[in-house]
Image (tube, rainbow, N blue to C red; front, side):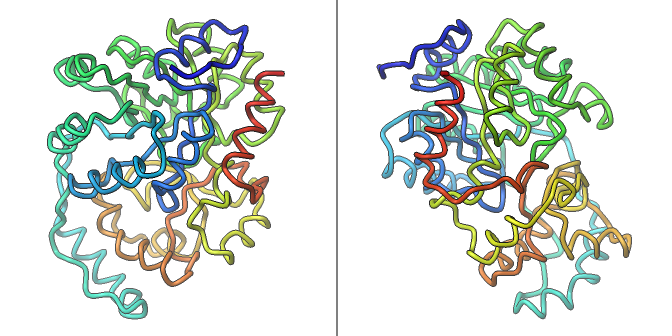
Length: 356
């Protein structure tokens, strides 16, 4: 067992004990810039690094988990999307592909497929079990009892993300060990299932204290946490720890090109948007030319997660070709405060904020 840091918050200690980590910090890189290197670096710094596997097939999961394990022997988590009933609208996909075909040609890409193959959740879950990943994270709701019972049997603790109190309570009833209270300012997907989307547009000042008051499990504060003041507010509201996303954006271990890092330093609190155009349900990301093109031309938007897979080749090519104007880059409203430092230094700074 690691030597845990001292904390006066009993729920912080519970969180540390349940997940076998040293400091009450979760590191969750966003889609578009998350890598095994970032995940491992957070874990090596004493926190809980998280690997986004929700869009991966079994082979991709196995390779990514192996890459993390080559870089760390400390606990980390795999983030899953619980299964959803969703249908592909072939007509919309065809119209979207037709509209974006000149863009794909400009990028040197082949015409997008007329059908989309999604990862199978049961196969993803089985792979996570077979690999004995140390911990599991859930975004977009909880898991049914058979899944949770299997994770408990395998001694794999689970945390869940929630963007409102009702969803947080449902996660607790499902058996999660901790809830990450994800406010409106956070990058990436809003995590709601029990309320409509507008019911999840909750500010940190409302979400954090309510979750900390009402939930029996540790509550981890998330919402583009970037400063000492954010950490102090989370502690004041009774939270048990922090989740870092934007703080890792320009870390030395991040895959972002230098040109993107320079641009991000000149963004503002108004540089992001919350929209469904990239994933098929509300998510916060860096506003850019592609998102505006989809909106202004009223291009079709497929249901989650088909929209992401319909655009994935463009997103991947944007990173390779240094085209930030075409990227899906999950960032929150405070990302303009980003600094270029090693992950170790970033996590140490927030550890210092938390333990003062």
